[in-house]
Image 1 (tube, rainbow, N blue to C red):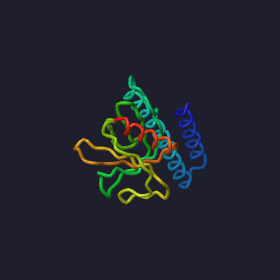
Image 2 (image 1 turned 30 degrees about the horizontal axis):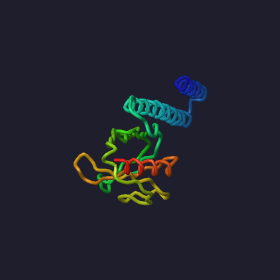
Image 3 (image 1 turned 90 degrees about the vertical axis):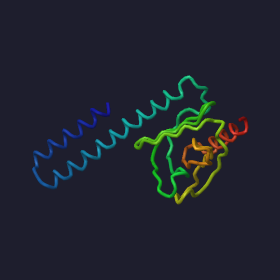
Image 4 (image 1 turned 135 degrees about the horizontal axis):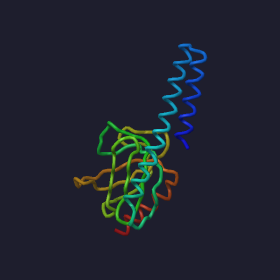
Length: 167
């Protein structure tokens, strides 16, 4: 359905451009076309990542099902951070996160989760509102953490703290 909408918008814009044949209209057409196709690509990519997260947790006992988040920072990356949209899920075995546009995947076994807290800043990243910081032991055995924004931050914090207590 969205591909049909994107194609229809582009066909109408091309038809209008050929009717008026102006450099302004051509520039406007190219800009709007790129805008439409970017959001179509983003929508397709989000669905692909969501399916991969769902496939990853399939067969596991899910504590919190996959949820769309805004990834803010990972402590081990230092002050050069990548942020963006992603999906996160928590099972009895692991916490799994995948970023939508970049190839960043973080899998943390639940026995390596240490803490969850609210912070306003992590490694130079300060979005102007509180973030949920999830502290864990990374694959190198070092303490690490990620900062995210999620709709139900209090629920995520309390659930991760319960998981930490049970391990």
